[in-house]
Length: 47
Image (cartoon, rainbow, N blue to C red; front, top):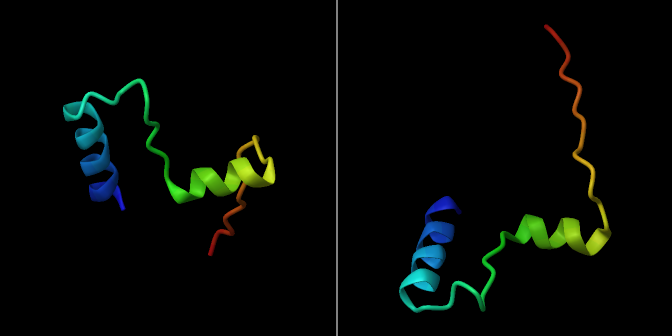
């Protein structure tokens, strides 16, 4: 969740680990694991 990401980022900064730890979302890990680099294109149908 966005709140958790903010808390993790703040903890990384206050702990002095900015250069050692990368904070990523689970969705980012999945995209990296399956090798998708381009953005998905979604068509929205008009009602």
